[in-house]
Structures are given as structure tokens and as C-alpha cells.
Amino acid sequence: MLFPRERLLELEAERLAPYAQRARDTRGREHPEAEPAYRTPYQKDRDRILHTTAFRRLEYKTQVFPIFTYRGEGPIYGGDYYRTRLTHTLEVAQVSRSIARALGLNEDLTEAIALSHDLGHPPFGHTGEKVLHGLMENHGGFEHNAQALRILTRLEVRYPGFRGLNLTHEVLEGIATHEAAYAPHFKPGYEGKGTLEAQVVDLSDAIAYAAHDLDDGLRSGLLRPEGLVEVPLLRDLAREEGLDFLRFSELSRRVLVRQLLGYLIAAAIGATHAQVAAAGVQSAESVRRHPERLASLTPEAEKALHELKAFLMERLYRHPEVLRERRKAEAVLEGLFAAYTRYPEILPKEVQAQIPEEGLYRAVCDYVAGMTDRYALEAYRRLFP
Image (cartoon, rainbow, N blue to C red):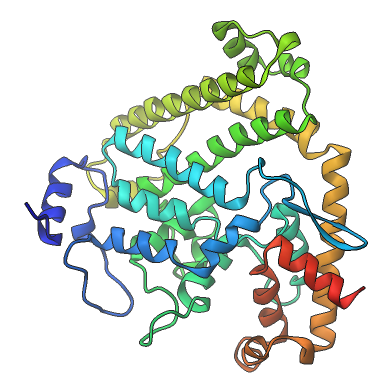
């Protein structure tokens, strides 16, 4: 039995909730092209994203703990176990699909948005984004959601007929409305809230990084198990599972993080379903036009997540070891940016070729933002031995 695209679109339309975005209702692509025989448009988008250079580079971009650090002799490998920007992306995709499936949303669209939501992140995590934004302050700024759109619409050149990936309107919209503040980068005057699929990805991002940063913090030893008692939700989950923070094993950590994820995912499904029912939305367009975002947590879970984030900010993200690595990252990016803008002749020829069209600073920014941590550290070592 075969399931060609038209049959897949029919089956999708039959099983999705009224407020879900159906692939058959896509607003299409900027450049018309034939759709594949056995994939829907959003499945095609997902596959195109997976095959990009930018997606592969996420493997060696920092989430919180650097995979590579810098010593005088050059980049030093930091270990296999901590999350990278790639594994974070995959975890967001998993959480997003779990929530989307329960709510009757379009899983293919949800996955495509989730897999692309962090493509614009530079090396060294949020430190890298902050540094590049400062360096580009007088040249249009830098923001990772806007950079993801640049990558997907301009910088990835994989097809002869157009620049970018020529993704559907809805996937690009999902990236632009991520974190709810960057839609002007998508379409001038756009004021929508995005599809519910896009909103679910945004919420899943917050759920995933809180859980896996807790996991990595405990694994690293920078977070001590006995300190978790300060977070009411973690204290309650530990009590339910019979975990003792004073005798906390590797298995205890895994159980706690799993229970945390399960609690937050269930809260997201329940609260979002209630919000959708209360709003009475009956189409993807009515979700976009609703005055408030509908994907949410229960008030109790929202409060608990806020407390967990505050704990992680104080005990992990501001830990002296983490801050020390951030200072190194700042020095590396500032050094690279200064050298490339002062001496553009040392840039690769393909980057130099972009300067007349993009301008020197934007071309350098695109180049540096696309680097992995390892590549940036090695480039710095070559310039400043």
C-alpha cells in the first residue's frame, strides 16, 4: 500500500484538531516549485533543515558547558556528556512533538520549527549572541532568531534557482515568532501570534533547557544535590520518588530530571488545551489573531518553572567556573571580529565576496556567527599565537 502526498494530506486533515495548521492550507513558498510525491510540504521543510550546514554545526556549539575550552596551546576538548546546541535542539523537538500530538497539532510543522529554531545561534551560547549584538550595535544588531531567518532565506545556498531553502510560510513564521518578539524580521507589520505549533515550540524550548541545564549542572558538580531543596518543585518531586538529596546517585539525578520533564509537559498540555477551549478558536488563523498566546503552563507550573530558572541563574549560570569560560568566549569573539573588520583581506575568499552586497560588518558577523566553538578557538589561536 502506498501513501502519496495527496493521501497523506487527506489523512492529516482528518486527524488534526480544528485549530491545527494543515499542510494542505499552507501559504506556500516564495519560489514556486514541485512538491515531492511522497512527502507533505512540512515534511519536505523538515528534511531540508536537517541537511543544512548550519544544522550540522550545532553539534559543536555551546549550550551552557563548553565542549571545547581554550588554553595557551589551543582548543582543549571538554567532554562528551554535556548538552550541545544540537542535542538541545533535538530535545526541544521531542518535547514539542509530545505536546503537539496530545493537542492534535501538526507534528511535522512542529518538528520543522523546533529543528530550525536555534540555527542562528553563534558559538559560545548566549554569551556569543550578547557579544555579537554589542559589536553590531551600530550596524543593524544581531539576534539569533533574525539570524536563523537569514540562514534559511539567504545564507544557505543549496539550490540553483534561489538562495536559502525556500521553506513554507508557516515554518519561517514559526521561527520569526519564536519568543514572541521578532516577527518584524519576518514580514513588515506582522502582528500575529503565530500558529499554535510555533507557540508550542517556544514553550517546549523553555521546558527543555530548564530540565537539561539542571541535569548538566548536577553532572558537572557545579550544582550540589543538597541545594535542590531550595526549589519547591524539585523537593516535591524528590519526595514523591523517594529520593534523598543527601544520598543522591546518578540514577537519582536521572529519575528527578525525567519526573521534572513529565510534570512540565503534562502541565503544558493541560493548560494549553484549557486556553484553546476558553478562547473558542476553530482554525489556525484564529489562533494567529487571538490577542494572547495560547500555549502555556498551569499557574502552578509557571510559578515552579520561574523558581527553577531563578535557582539556575544564581547557582549555575553565574557560577565562577561558568563565568570564567564566558570571559574567554568574549575575548575570542571580540578578537576575531576586530581582526576581520580591520584586515578583511585575511577573510576566506567566499566571505570577501559577500562584502559588496552585505557590507563589511554584516559579512564578518555572518562568518563569525556560523563558526563552531572549536573553529572559533582555532581561528583565534592562528591569529593570536
